[in-house]
Image 1 (cartoon, rainbow, N blue to C red):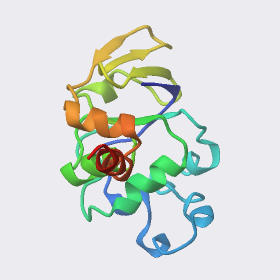
Image 2 (tube, helix red, strand yellow):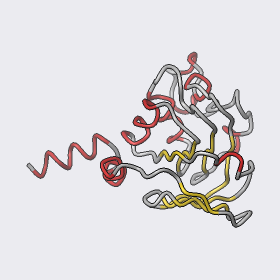
Image 3 (cartoon, rainbow, N blue to C red):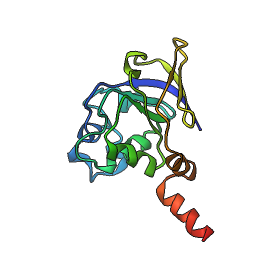
Length: 164
């Protein structure tokens, strides 16, 4: 599993309510997607492209734990999230919906907004193609990688139910 795209760099302590504002959570996806992360970077919802990579600092996805934050990011088409650290609920929500989330301490000091990144999801190897620097994310548990390969928790459960 690979991701390659533009780096969208965000800072520390981004709560789920800044990923998707609370006044939008019951709106249609077409409306929500116009506002994903707009309070952090108004250009993101206008210019994010499939495969792009969200890079964030510490405690990404903290606070409410609403799964809609991870779902909205996935709906933008991003290839993955790479953060220095994530809230545990956000981290798990990502895998449950089939969106890779990697933790890589120190990554924000090594990338700039707009850099082109390549990420090997399974190995955790991150290459900044703009600078040539390589980074190593923390290992992802095998169970979560299996969940990603299946397409998320529901797809994994359906596959396992069919095997039984």
